[in-house]
Image: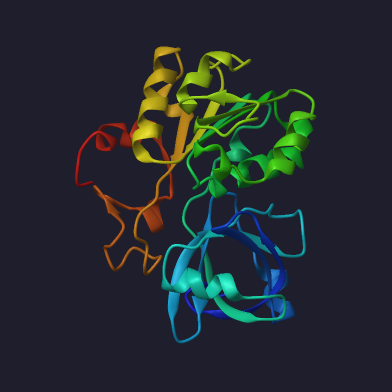
Length: 277
């Protein structure tokens, strides 16, 4: 059986530079039996371990059944990610995982889905979109609302163009600050919500991004008659052990690594407005 508590060796299969500070790497275990056993759900994460340096939690953006490799999109922000950024196909690292609670997509078949993402931390939401696109007939309408601080921060341009061409799919993009030629909305991502072409009161909504943005978005959705228990969000904390032992990612009575990172909004809405949680 696959032991997620032990780092297992993996090899880099592919690498893509998404922007100046964001890159993606596709991985496979060097043990073929582990590749057969390994299973994950959209929204879960792995701990990527650089031998002798340390490990970091990174969301899995690829589909559970869409490829022979599993893909992580990483922003370079610290010592471990700086080393990960230097890895090329053929290089090796360690993996523990998968960990956490993912998006409840298997329970939402035939429902309309609204995905709202803000900032650069959009990898958890991409796993939702990849999952739905490969099973398009199992879901209703899909609305993707993505906001970035600066227009140059937007990555996956080709993906958004492809998603725009899919049936029953709406893509809305926004930038707080835009360079000349930006063809989409200039302003906050929440300003796009009135343009969403599905019944928000009946849709399931997935949120990812800064906590203030997710809380503000959820409040606007509730004003549009959305149900609190039909809103889910992906939380981000300093996750170090990934199994709820070290306490670094405590979020009220929960640990984000073990009880999240995906939470139902009805369970955590009162915590989002409190400092220090």
